[in-house]
Image 1 (cartoon, rainbow, N blue to C red):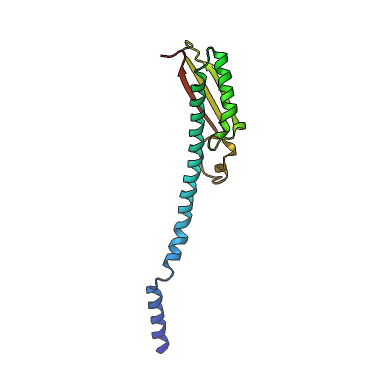
Image 2 (image 1 turned 120 degrees about the horizontal axis):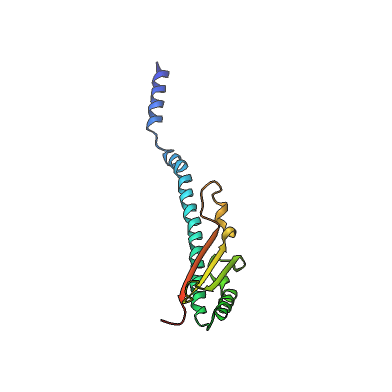
Length: 148
């Protein structure tokens, strides 16, 4: 009879014991938290690179407006990208390609299109099984030729 009471007391004590609850909750929730945290970091890096590419296109177009004709504007864009593209966050200048031309319709606008091969960003290895954005970032900027 004494053995039975001890067994019941032990079971009651086990059911009311909360000492390992925090460890179990941490074990269950920490993978989800880490996934969310790494996802925010990965997409933050990607959006930062995309913003840098857009800024490169805009700055190159602004630089090109000083040119008198399309050839001079293209030279100014090439010079700007060669000298400045490496200074933008998350951008490797060797992975950058561009196209700079007057608009086909009437030539009143100058368009700078920039394409960046983003495969060297560290985000692609974080989530091999999760859908990620494309590895090529394309942005363009247009500026009016000849003033107002």
